[in-house]
Structure formats: structure tokens, C-alpha cells
Amino acid sequence: MSKEQIQSICPGNCDNLTQFAITMAFQPVVDVEAQNIYAYEALVRGLAGESAGEVLAGVSEDQMYAFDQCCRVKAIELAAKLGMTCRLNINFMPNAVYHPRACLQKTINAAREFNFPAEMITFEFTENELVSDHAHLKNIILTYQKNGYMTAIDDFGAGYSGLNLLADFQTDKLKIDRQIIINIDQDKPRQAILAGILLIAKELGISVVCEGVETVQEYKYLKEQGIRYMQGYFFARPKIEALTPASEIDWLF
Image (tube, rainbow, N blue to C red):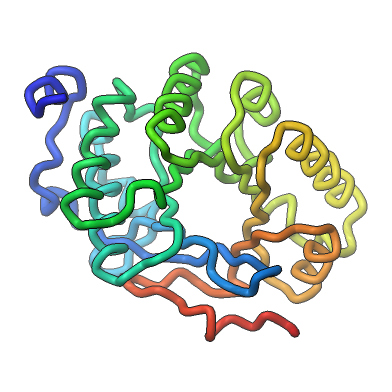
């Protein structure tokens, strides 16, 4: 697909990355069985360390497509620069994707330009973003999967659609939100909800990641339930333009 075709379908311009003053912080997703880093999630930050919320507050609605594209390119550029050898998780905004194949082209080009293996990219979308057109979202996910990219629902259990999304289509991974994980070692309702999600995920062949793990008690409980992939402050906080190595993580032998 040519540059002219892409621009005719998707509005905005992301040729000049300096139009948005952004960088990326990277937080590891750990494999507690293998005791290594499975992936790093790229999280947008301002150049002075501003949070994602602060950055997004300065992006207008008509800039969302260009902003989404620039975040993807910046994540890939920095991952390659930092020598990342595991998976790279990139967040995308479904409402900013006008034509899935055209909007994916910038990612493909960036992976090629920075010599980062495209097959190591996972696209995450947050359930917190209201998406009224589920058919469009399904088309995005299927397009990404057909092009060799893994997909994930981020913040699962904290957003608008919940299980309705899984009834319409299946991503490769579910990332369970911190609000379900908090104090789960001593909270029976949360334990029951987690057990239900795990059962559904198993039946659908979806891998699960537990987000927001912050205490040793949460970590131990989740590990006892067979959770292999986890993410959270207990392991490492996001680092701006840096990767936390596996050697800095407490695996609790």
C-alpha cells in the first residue's frame, strides 16, 4: 500500500515525530515459571516524565490517529535502540484506527526501518476505551492477527464491555486489571472472579497475564493458581527509555 493510499484513508500526519513531545517507558511482563522477561510494555510519557494521562490531555481528537501512529513508531524505535530481544507490547487506540490494514503499514515500515522483528510485537487495546462499533474492533484484531501480530485486551475487567468482547472475538491474551488483583490473596469475591476468567480463557485458548501485582502475598497467591505471566510494581516500575533486566527482579526462590 502506497503512502498516498494510506493518507487518503487515514487522516493526520506522523512523518514528523517531533510534532508530539513524547518518549516511552518500558515495564516488564515476567514469566514466573521460566524466571525471565517475557515482554516489555511500552507506555507513553512526556519528555519531562509526564504521565500518559497528562500527555493525552494535550492531544486533540483530530490528532488521535497521528498520535497513535507516532506512539507505535517511537516504541519500536526505542525497543530496537535498547536491544530488546523479547516481545514488545504496544498499546493502540481502536477509535483512532480508521482502516486496519492502512494504519498497520506504519508499524510494518517502522519495524523494517529499525530492524525490529515484527513477529515479536503484541498489540494491546484497553477495555477502558468506549468502542461502540464492535464489528470494526473485531476487524482490527483479525487484521492484526492475519498479519502475524499477537493481540491482547488490556485492563480486562475494568472497562465497558467485559465478557461481551470475548463473545465477539478472541485475542491471544487477556491482561487482568489491577482492580481484580488487589488483595486477591484474602478476598474471596476476587478469587472467584479470577477463577471464572481463568476457566473461560482456558476454554477459549487465551493466555492470561495478571497486571498490577504489587505485594508478595498477591504474587504468591497468583503463582499458586498457576498464573505464569505477571506484571506490576512488585517486579519493576516502568523505566523511561530503559529496560529492567531479569537480574534485578526478585523471583522469590
